[in-house]
Length: 199
Image (tube, rainbow, N blue to C red):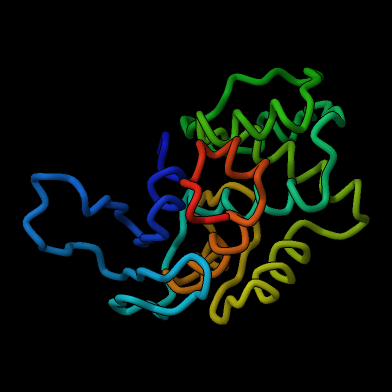
């Protein structure tokens, strides 16, 4: 999933199981993903859609919402002390940044681990940090912010996207969330620079 966010946010071209950049010279015009949407990054107008409102499992694209909340609610210089649950509460063998129990990283360092490594341990630590900072459950924070962004058919229950029957979204909803993300310079910096047209 490395660089998945860069591709998704640069084009606001979001597929539920596949993310493709249409500029690739070998692309033959065939769209193989089950769902897709292309929107205008400023207006939110839909340019193209394919089953854009069909509920799907978002996997690591969940992390764009986790990142959005961190940028909006957090302070990048705040420290996160990684708990046993954050480190070992993730699915064995899933992507991680080899963070140790008791290790202290800043929120900014944790965000880079989230972006570059698609690190589930970093996502869990950021989730715990956001709960402590706001006094709300992470799922409440995520779902409230998703609705505020324009999501209509989503339910988020964790910060990383590891499998859960109650964790789902749509291509359209992810596009609306991504549209909010690219408003923030820090988000664009950490998730590998969306081009200038997004500002």
